[in-house]
Image (cartoon, rainbow, N blue to C red; front, side, top):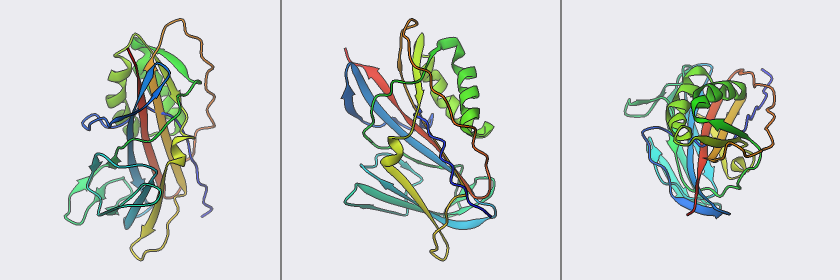
Length: 233
């Protein structure tokens, strides 16, 4: 099968609804940047044992499930999970416990984006449904995303929302190996990363243009995560 590595990038203020935010690490102008990091879904074509390895330029905070291995590197931190992965995305660890995805968070330095959208409170859910579909998330993945982030966007009358993972992906990379230790490259890799901050109804921003929606083929990996910016008083 011809392998096409697809990276659909976005800056997404993201994480899980039941998992804690990570530490504040950077201040940009009159905004305080708070990073909250990704969840990773793994969809092989057939059930197989996979080791997922994260190489991060930085440190890890909350990780779930706990990695099978974690070490400090010259770059920052490396963590790995060995799981039995099913085509429906279910991940099973050595004890038989199942998970819908892998989660980690930790401070990663980000720039403050300028291109994006200004979203009114009442438009938060339909806006996210539309944009996440364009970026390649499934209904299930979008639901996980929206149940965490829609309340945060709705906390403001208006919210600046930007999707651009180009800087983030330079700081966090993944590799995959099979049971024999051979490298496995995803046919489709979708990465979504969002940033939000409070906005004014009259602010003018340059809208983002998205690449064509990625087509899922073969072994597929999907990641979403993001960062939230708070005004500094």
